[in-house]
Image (cartoon, rainbow, N blue to C red):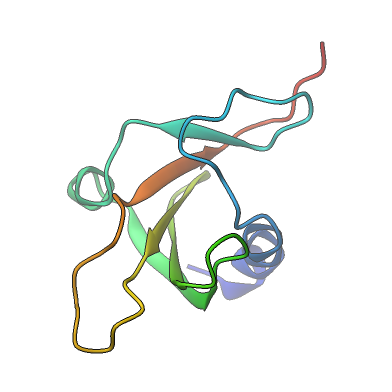
Length: 105
């Protein structure tokens, strides 16, 4: 896998980290929520190509974003962690979204 192909996509992923769990698709949206889980994607041959960790804008809680790729298909999965250092459980389910071609109405 060549990192030159992943780098531009990765910057786009990091810039578009926020995705609400039940949001309706917006015109020109590049991410579509999916029912696939992080486990499902790994089992289907997707590999983790990047991980970022930042504080969520809405809550300030630590948020990890996993970027997964298989050939020309890309997903991101976001996990919000508890603020307590001793807690390893997520405060919310991991949300995954697929990179899609933007559409217009």
